[in-house]
Amino acid sequence: MPKLLITIDGPAGAGKTTVSRELAERLAYRYVDTGALYRGVAHTARVRGVAPEDDAALGRMLAGLRIEFARGRAGPRILVDGEDITERLRSPEVSMLASTVSARPVVRAFLLKVQQELGREKAVVFEGRDMGTVVFPEADLKFFLSASEATRAQRRYAELRTRGGADLEEVARDLHRRDAQDRTRALAPLTPAADAVCIDSSELTVAQVVEQMLRHVNAKLAARPGSP
Image (cartoon, rainbow, N blue to C red; front, top):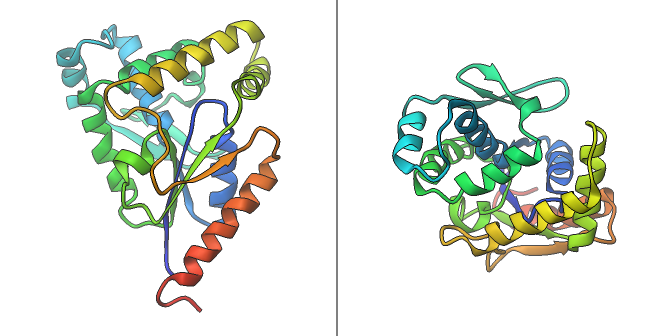
C-alpha cells in the first residue's frame, strides 16, 4: 500500500489538532503537531530571556537546541534538550509569542530541517500553518481547515477553561490578533495552498471532518500505482 504525506493547515481554533490526530489514528500514520515545535522555540526563548525579534540571539539559542517529539500515553510529547515541556505550551502568552517567532527567518530555517526530516519516510499527518505551502509543497494530499472566527474563539475558550480561568472576550481578541499576525506576515503567511482541499468546520463535527478527509485519502490511494 502506498504511503502518503498529508498536510493540514489552518488558523488557530479550527480544530486541526483533534482532526489531525484522529485522521492519523484512522490511517495508522504518525501525527506531527508542527505548531508545538514553534511553541517549543517560543517557550525556550521566553525562559532564556531571548527577545523574539533578535535574530542573532535566536540563532545562538537554536545553534545548540535539540527539539524532538516523543510518544506518550496521552499523545505526542515535545522535548527540548531532553526536557518534556508539553504542558507549558498552550498558554495564551506562549501562543502569541509562537506567532511572533514563527515569522523570524532564523527560526523557520531551523525548524524547516526538523520538519522535513520527520516527513522523510511519509505515512505521516503534519498539522500546521504553512505545511502545504512552504514546508511540503509536494505533499501527496493537502487540507486547509477553517471555521468562523466566532466558532474558533468559542472552541479555544472551552479548551482553556478546562485548564483554569479564561475570558471569552479576551480569547476572541487574542485569536483575532493572532489571525492578523499569521495572515499578514511577510514570511510564509497563512493561506491555503493552491491545490489544497478546503474544509469549513464551523457546522461540522470532528467525525464529519475526518470522514470528508478520508474520502480524499482513499481516492488518492486508489489512484496510486501499486494500489490493490
